[in-house]
Amino acid sequence: MESIISKRFLISEDLALELNGELKSLSFQGIFTCLRKTLDIKYTRKLHIDSILKKCKGRFFKAVSECVRKCIKINVPKFPQNFITNIAIEYNQKFMDFTVEELYQHFHLLPYSLSDIMEKKYCQKEKEVYLKYIFLSKIGNLYMQYIQCKQYKRMIELIKTKKGVKIAKLYQFVSDNFINYYLFSKAHIKKNSQIGENGQNSNTELTIIDINNKGESQESKDDSLV
Image 1 (cartoon, one colour):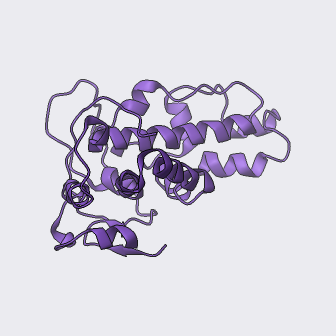
Image 2 (tube, one colour):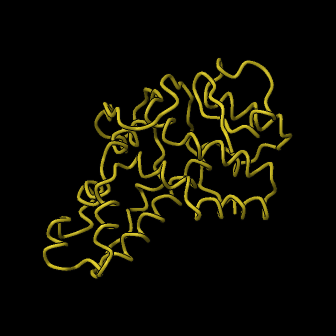
């Protein structure tokens, strides 16, 4: 389906039909709230922006982990749960320009580099090209590929079946703009021991729509949409 672009965000054609008013002046949270109200969706904790962001992040990295495990003969640990559930803007910004291999190395999840894996023949036969593609892809770029894949589209259809079309539309808006939200959002200025050094990003390779997002994020518990 074709999409249109507001001043800041990618909005699919069917979502645009649901929205009225001047979209280009709205923040991420503003569009999200407008969409929720237009669709007449009652606010619940499960439908808080942060809850959906956690689901988007969790499902993406689960898919990455599953792909890597299918390619490698040795045991590959999952990404840490505290990384998956941390949706703070500043924390996530610093990872968007990482390659998948760099992310595994950052969390010390693999004892070997990609070159070592290939040299020691720890990669499954005929999976070498696929593993190289995943490991050398930047997180942001790989996510954009993920939301085009069949697995993602099946998941959206599952949400439609279990929770309804309206909830699926809300989830899809957050999913479509997940990378934009983190790369170009301004983090809250607050004391938080879980947030490390400033994660400013200079990546210019991603195909990104938003360059001025000022959307906000608040902490909430993770709830399943499906």
